[in-house]
Image 1 (cartoon, helix red, strand yellow):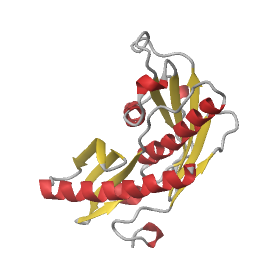
Image 2 (spheres, helix red, strand yellow):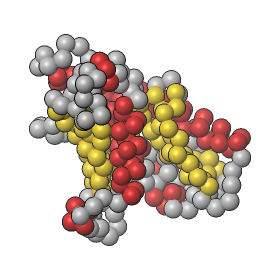
Image 3 (cartoon, rainbow, N blue to C red):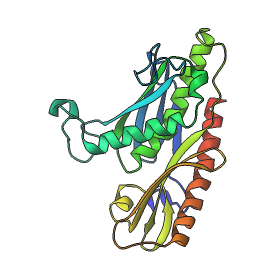
Image 4 (tube, rainbow, N blue to C red):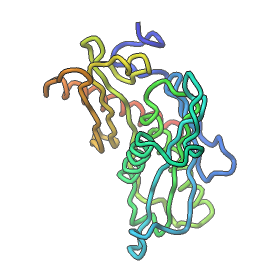
Length: 237
C-alpha cells in the first residue's frame, strides 16, 4: 500500500497556496503529500554581469532545507560557511526549469529570484519546488504589471516537475521518502506544458534499466505533469 492509499501512477495530494508571504512580490506554499516548501519570488531591477547589456532579464533560484525539515535536526548550511553539493545542484535545476518557461528578453533588464525553503521533507522536494516556484513567479510578474513596472507579461509557458521511480519492479510516480530510499530506479522529470521535456535526471540505484522502461517512466511522468499544470492554472485563475 502506497502512502495516501494511491495507485502506482497517482501523485500524492498536491496543494498550491498562493500569496502566503505579504512582503514578497510573489509567493506560494506547495505541498506534495507531507513534503512542504515555501517559495517566494523577489524582483530586482538589475541583472548579473553575464546578462548586462543584452537588454534581457534573468531568473535564478536558491534552495535550502530548514533544520527540522527532516527526522533529525540538521545544521544550517549558513552556519557551516558553505552550501553543499546537493543544494547547489538542486537550485541550479530550479533556475534552469524556470528560465525555460519565460521569454527572458521580454522580461527586460531585471532579475527574478525564487527562494525555495523546505519546511518539511518527505521526498520530491526539488520537484515540488519547481512546481510551486512557477506559481510564485507568475504572481510576481502580475504584481509588476499592476504597478505598471512592466507594460505586459512576458510570454510564459507552464513548467512543473515530478519524480518517477521503479519500486519492487513497478513504475510509480511521486515517490515519498520511504520509496525513494529503496527504489531500483530514480528519475526526476521536468517538462513544459504539452509534455516538452526540459530536464531528465535519472539513475539505476542498483543494476540497470532498458529503453522501454525509460519510455514508460517518461510517459508516466509527463502525464502527471499535465495534471500539475492543470492545478497551476486553477490556482492562478
